[in-house]
Length: 239
Length: 268
Figure 1 (cartoon, rainbow over the protein chains, first blue to last red):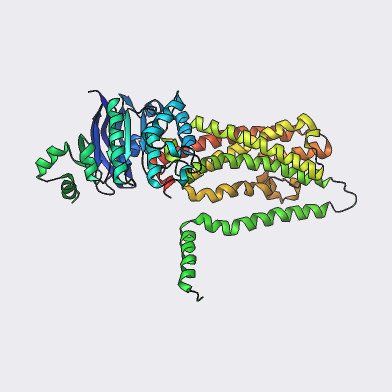
Figure 2 (figure 1 turned 30 degrees about the vertical axis):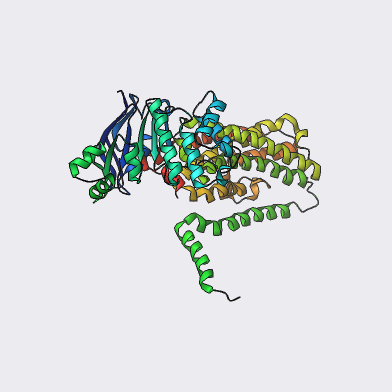
């Protein structure tokens, strides 16, 4: 499998505080990797560096074989992102928001793409409603629909199902995984929902105080640390 | 019904905490009144100086005409700033920055938007001024075009500088985003000739393209002469200020990426 993402010695320091400390990892085509760790471990900073929102202090990020620092726009055409803290404009309708982002991502067949995503993410009935008038769960679904507008080959998800009810969260997890597997795309997924991570991830990377302290398949890690499930493993590693 | 004083105290305390944490909010307590005092003070001094029957100045042209053109400058600056702030307010700015959009595309988008909105607003205000005060701006003809273009350019330059400051200092800086053009107003000699200002302020005003533009436009309207010198000064400064404004915006985005403060635009 070809590499989608290669991170080498990635480090971010803020005025003497090391948020991310020389981490290195890779993601291959079709792989779903969970980025776990307690609050303040450096997950969001790592994701923001992969999106070029934050400039690394040290290290190198290579996506689709090209350096992020030199080919930012070209790379971002095939990358997307969803997080509850990155909302879409509340004063536009669902359809208008998706149309704006179709243009920002240079999508050609916009109407067809939007119709498909509205159907898949069960948003068709809200198409002409203002985004701000919808529930937080519905807004999360719009954010995820936006994340698929450009058929990304690398998807970065920062706690994407945090505000969803279990039924819709399950539907979205399945949909997101199916869609990415269909195009051999990779996902880097952060969540504090350990059951979710067990369901979707091929392997996990565990961050603590900015460093990778464990990284493998969930089964191998459970065996290594002799823990019954991921939640127990998380509590053990976090401590 | 009995009043619970703790409730009122809670409301006050919530705002005091906010004021203490944001110097810009405290600043606005003094800022507006001071600037308005300067502006209206200079207008009063000027009106007093022309109150003699020897002077024959068309106040409709001088004051209302100036207001119409000032509104164009103000509108352009505000459109550039608000277009960006809309995405900050709705917490969409991260989505914009992670899309494959180049900074110059963002700048071009804001510029075209301000051109469109500025033109609509200017046409409307000019029409209302004609209907209410019989002010016929268009009778001056082509002379005004270079002045209007220069006002537009300085509005954009200031808009990009304010965007840079908002990115650097966070959304709480937006209070100054509204107030910076107002600071420029008394020194720009919008409603009165620049020689009304004290000499030290005249020296500062010299470096504002808006001063040259409003002095120039008054010369066109009242003296029917074309003040080439003012226009050349304004144009030269605008080339420099627009370049500085755009470079400053680029620099601040770079600094924000380095400091990790782009992410904080949605949380501050």
